[in-house]
Length: 316
Image (cartoon, rainbow, N blue to C red; front, side, top):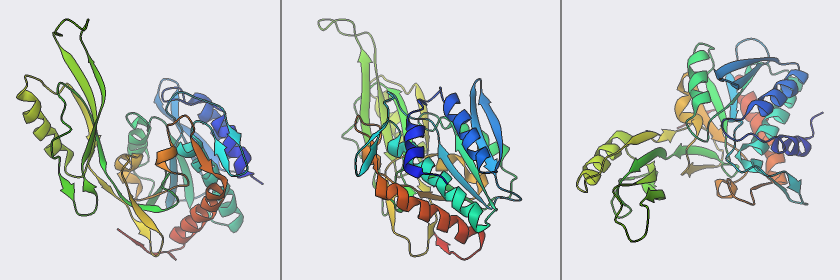
């Protein structure tokens, strides 16, 4: 029987920064095969691959998360209440809970599900995009995505936009939404110049938008703004806000972070849930509460069972 805390620590102790996920994928192959699942790789690029594992028949529910983390890696440790380490909540703890739930589902005789663990979510979602094409005709109805949502089902998430441009634009109003609130922007990186006493010939900045409007509308507005300063947009990447389904009666929330949900539309209606908080992800003290991880096993198991047996209602 799977011990989820120990499994989470094993996963954390495998470094898997974006672009170097191979060892993590190989470990998951072995772990999922031991459950008796049919496991295969989906090649993404070079040594990078997604891991797909099915129980039997048509998977009505795809259980999904990402196997890459942000750098730098640091090993796991634990105290009475928490598991620490890179990926503890984003998303090694999530994956441990999912696999433990899979073991319980099989014991219940539930077979209409599959696991899909993907690479590249922290940058360009290349794994999710590849899976959305290859597995478009599986006949799946739902995709249950695992991210640290504080153990609540997410109803919606703000979109994402990365831009290298020449300007500071924090004072601009980028739109608002009745449910999602205001769009936000962060100027995270500024580059340019050679010496402090020389006016630089050029400069650039990178910005992250969390948009609540159509991201093309935001892009056009930014283009007009930076052109007034002689600047131009040199790169954009992003997606519109996403809306997920929620099991009737389950606690729900709105999240301000981006996920692979935007790129898995062919796999079914999306649900987004996971233990841990995004506020604890990516930092030097990343952690997940043990009690939240354990409770998530029941939530994943009961949600998949209900969806497969048509005994659970969902709403947008």
